[in-house]
Length: 417
Image (cartoon, rainbow, N blue to C red):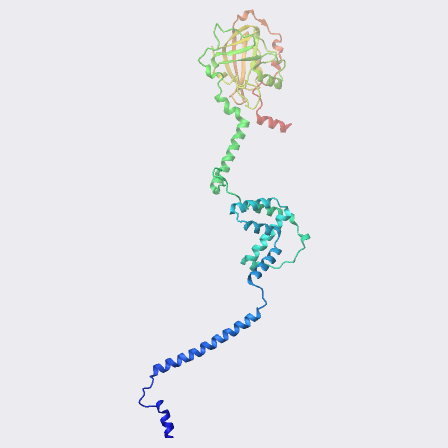
């Protein structure tokens, strides 16, 4: 025992200093860390060995990528293959767009539909909205697809395909301008304006002779120029000349009847000698009728021949040229009579007279203006007697001729008939 105690006296010698508490903790932690690290490495090595054993016969990653690409290429359509080859050709974007447009334009309607069908299918596959709203549909056979109903849609999409940029000098595309809607007040004003215009046109069409007649002055531009003097050559054609109102128009002597329609038609060529009354150079009453106004839609250019006849006064003169002779008449009587007062068509107080008759006031047929002149040249004593005398057709008239019927009176007469 004493020997043993002396043998181990070096380990428990009280004279040797003991390690402090901090060092003990550090040594303990280092020991435990060494043990833990060794166990983790061993576990990782074991897992690696097992993974390598499981994939020992697996192909390389590059080979798998090639295999996947081959499978994907086998499922592509000819259109998808074309665009893939085009994209991988190294061309620029404008060249790719032009090549694809040319390729697409040469496809049939069936192939174009297939292109868009593939586009929509790919779009729905990558779209969250399409996946959320997609509803199952029964599969249809290719023969059941009606491609014609999609042609319009396809053509609209063709127009939207990427196009090459237009030249810089091309004119800009005009865009439609949107005008603001008119207010109700503007619409009402427009409607009233159109309505008033229609009414004015309507009234003017039916009663224009009343509106125009007050402004008509035959030969107004030559009012200061003498229409006749001693040097004036006598016209070989029958005419009436009234210098005071600048009238020089033909006289129609060839109407053998007092029928109103015949007289009306003859008035289109001038003023009319009333049938069976005296002629220039004969004793008796020579009657000439003429228009004071007329509808502008009627034919003839002498519609306003006597519109200013009311200006003649006693002492004024007018002339009748016939058969190369000029007969001069001096006004001595002017009166307004009822259209039924046919006495003015018969013999007058003077032996050789000329009576000018027109409607009064101008634009109406209410009354008749009668201007009577007596022959002063050539000397009426050399005249011969009128052929018909008191038994002329004029004395058998029931009404004095007047202006032609207005448009309104013609319509009323048409309904009455």
